[in-house]
Amino acid sequence: MKISRIIAITIICIILGIMIAWQYKSTNYNQSLISFENKRTEELKNDLIILQKRNNELSDTLKKLSEDYKLLEKSMTNDSDLAKYYKRKLEEAKIFAGFVDVKGKGLIVTINSSEYTRVHEEDVLDVVNELRSAGAQAISVNEERIVAMSEIRQAGKYIMINGRQMAAPFEIKAISEPGELERALMLINGVVERLENWQLKITVNKVDEIIIPAIREDSPVIKMDLLVPVE
Amino acid sequence: LSLSVNILIIHDQDLRIILNELKKGGAQAISINGERIMPMSEQVCAGPTILINKNRYTAPYIIKAIGDPDNLYKVMINCNRLGLMIRDKIKVKIDKSDEITIELFKGINEIDKLISGMEVLDNEN
Figure 1 (cartoon, rainbow over the protein chains, first blue to last red):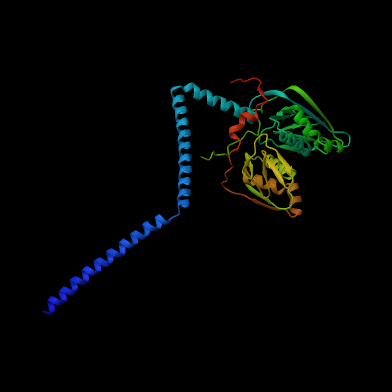
Figure 2 (cartoon, rainbow over the protein chains, first blue to last red; figure 1 turned 45 degrees about the horizontal axis):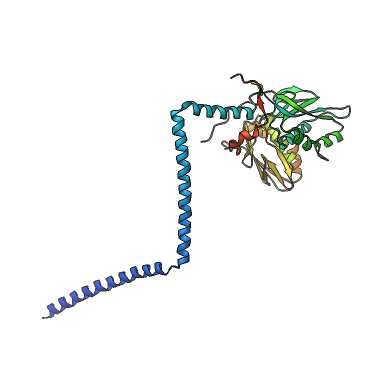
C-alpha cells in the first residue's frame, strides 16, 4: 500500500515536471516571436534598405567582374589584343620613367653664374621642383634626363647629376604647356626672382619643340638590385 | 632606412634637400608618407602642409628609402640641413631597418595623362 503510493507520487511528479518544462519553453519561444513582431516597422524598413543596398553593391560587383571576365575571355581568343594592351602600357611606363627620348613643346631655362655667385645645387633643385609642380612631364638638365632617383650634387665648382659632372651654365629643359611653366617660374617672389636676387643670370625661353633625351643606359641611377616587388 | 620628422614648420625645401641627399646616398626607391617619389614628383609648400604628387600632407613626414642602410645613415647624419633642423628643435628620428615596404605610385593608372604632351622621338625597339 505504501509502496504503491510512493510510485504514484513519483509518476505524478515526473509528469508535472515535463509539463512545466514544456510550458516554460513554449513561453520563451512565444516571447521571441512577440519581440520580433513588436519591432517597429521603421526598424524593419531600415534593415530592408540596408539589405537592398548591399544587394545592389553585390550586383554591381558581379557586373564588373563579368565584364572583366568577358574581356579576358575575348583577349584569350585574341592574344594579340592583350599583347598590344601590355605593349602600350609598357610604352607609357617607359616614357614616364624616362627610358625613351621624347619631344614636345615646353620651356628652356638657363642659369649661369655671375662674377658674384656660383650656381648651387639648391638653385637647380628649386627650379626643377618648381617645374615639376607646374606640371612638367619630362625634365633634363644639360641633357641629363631627370628620373625618380636623379640626384643633384654639389661637387666643388661643379654639379653632378646622374653621376655626371657639369659646370655652369645649366640648361634646364621641361616639356609641358609652356605658358603654365613660365607663369609658375615668373611669380613675384618666385624662383626666378629669388635667383636673380642672388645675382645669378637666368633666362626663360618658350620653345615649340624641345627634345629631351632618355636616361643614359650606363647611368648609376638605374639600380634596383635592392628592390624586391611586394605581392 | 626610415626617417620621421615632426612638428614646427618643415619647409618644402627641407624635404627636397633630404630627398636629394638620400638620392646621393644611392637610394633606389623613396616614399614620403606613402607617396612614392616618381620622376616628376614635386614637393611644394602649401601653408602648413606640403603637396607631394598633388596630394596634401602634414607633419609628421615619414620618409622611407631603400638602399644600403649604413650608407644612407651616414649621408643623413652628415646632412647639414638636417643638422639645422635638429638645432631648430624639429624632432627627427632615423632608423635603420632590415625590411621596409615602399608603396606603389598611387597614380599608376593615370600615367597616360602624365605623358600627354610628349611624343616619342625614336623608338629603337
